[in-house]
Length: 258
Image (cartoon, rainbow, N blue to C red; front, side):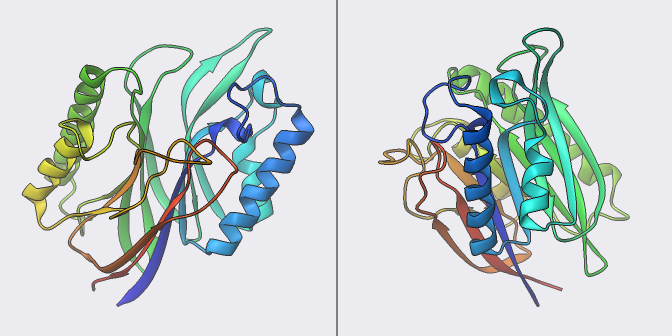
């Protein structure tokens, strides 16, 4: 069995612990992204799922954060899922992204709505891991409305169900799902609903098993999760102590069954 490691991290537009983007100079954003790159290198993941990553936004230095991280971490493969795009004087372009040491065979980005600022969505990708397709969903849910989150996870569940039905030739396993869910498992909300749905597809496990991820530096809530399907055995997870964002990263390593 092959051992793999996945990291999920909301990097908050590279602004660090500054509460609002736009108040951080571009050179400080670049310096913080280099620190994030060093953290990623230290954790040595095979796949990194990122949220709140900017492609070209005035409030975040007007440069491609994903490419910057890819160069500094040495990952060979990457894909962007842009959920917000606005042209003009105050331009912005940001969303979710994936860095991978394994080839990305295909990807698709799904937006939950049509807002040009604050829109959420999920990025689906299939990776080639030793000749086997490894499906991953990287999502970011609404932070204000429980009702919106339920509608959003319904979109995710419908998408996964559709994929399973129409891709039986290459779908070797249900997807790994990770990201910033903006709610904890302790309340009847979207995280619990997703875990209930995944229980229909076997013994999914939810990580981290303990520890909070938001707000850093003194997190009081667990908002960032990784759902592992039954093919991912013997998992070990942790919340990584970090002061590079208002979220803390979650890392999980596991054995991929043959």
